[in-house]
Image (cartoon, rainbow, N blue to C red):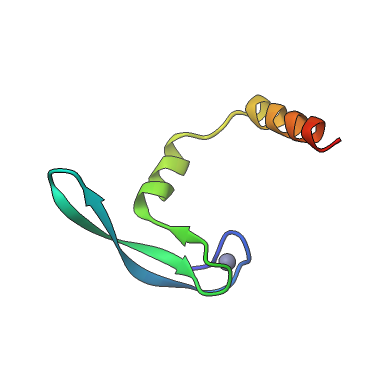
Length: 69
Ligand SMILES: [Zn+2]
């Protein structure tokens, strides 16, 4: 597994997600040992299901430039 940010090695890790009534939910994910980027199954499935359109990305970039200048 390779980190999408720094392309270094990622290690498999168990994560615990505390839920209100269902108790704790454990799942396996990946953590980058170099930059700390975390990938879990939910993030991966969300990225695959909801791809942001190009127009949304362009708008974010423009507003960021206005804030900076
Ligand atoms: Zn990384």
